[in-house]
Length: 533
Image (tube, rainbow, N blue to C red; front, side):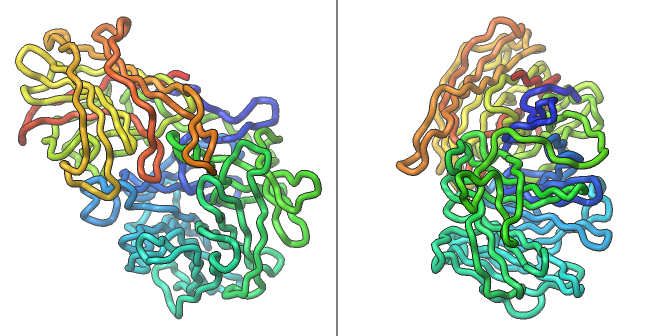
């Protein structure tokens, strides 16, 4: 494993800058257990799923585990873009960690562990039905347990409604009647979703964003009765800050008694990046961020004093990106485009071997794409490949994966490697190849005898701002450029494209190896993947 500094929020002077993670950890939820903080995020159709991050200071985070090795339904052997694991929650109760996550077409699932760094239990579908999303479990002082959740209009026909239901104390099932506790359509809180349930000073609080991912705000509901009625208040708006949306997240405290709020911001191509805001209380209502000009709501901060977490030593760090594949297992920065198979790859101790898997779809729907999140707003990634072991009809390359995708591929044809630059358009929720449009541009071929070393350079640069519509302005505009070389010095441009995110996810980049036939014994070797800011 190689440590590369790409984006770190710790300024080293007692302050931090936002975002704390410039990477697509969408829909984050977090808890504190003692001096440890744990955060999870959505993972959609990528596997392993539900990344678990760990920190001791709320600013410096590492990915330490995945809660599920595979998405728990057979159809996810293929990438069903935009489906799979949506916004999860994490809780700790009487020695057990609970991860609750929705799959909007299949139901609400629960997985548990006594050691969050170890193996989590096989997920149990505690509400097998489509439509409910964004669940959050809660254990009350009397031992009773509850679940609050939102809804997906695309699956249930309506939106902006929150439901509450009693849950078994072990978290493995629901009991009682489901109660509608809030309707944002009736309260100027359209698209309220992502509810997180807490209790303080006898009040039940539900933190839930409203107004939409890119242009919304943070709302909090409160009631003395868990089933309501709930009153509400907007507690954070974008205001004069550059942090659009500020969307769903988690309230956590420190052992020193401070309150903080983790949330995401949608920056389009790079996905949903994570911010940390100070939080205070006024008349038993939270204020997230800093209130200006006497406002009773806060605005996001861009730089602030680090949380007081007591006498805890914690290194300045960031999630891994670069990799030399010398570990015994794949690095936690990597995910597959769908549920994976062991025969797709092998780690030799010095590199990664990607076996040639029969290509049954367009590139964007290949399940055996090995990809990872963008780790910074701008960067260069150089992938060193050895293609000398490809068989005729095999190919390997590097892909930039989004709603539109681009890639360079090298296909073994006798004594040459036919190089091509391919662009495609991903179709939401579809896996039918002819519903995706691909354009192929032939490039100068590579001499197969020299294919012991092929370098692919993947570069992301901000080239301006984009307006998505009249209300959604000033989002970063990034250009992705892909180049290739046989010596790592002289590069030839394969192609470039404007970056477009995937369905609910940021752009990812990675590697693949495929074949035009079954049973190929060919393979590509990935020697290293090196990121530089």
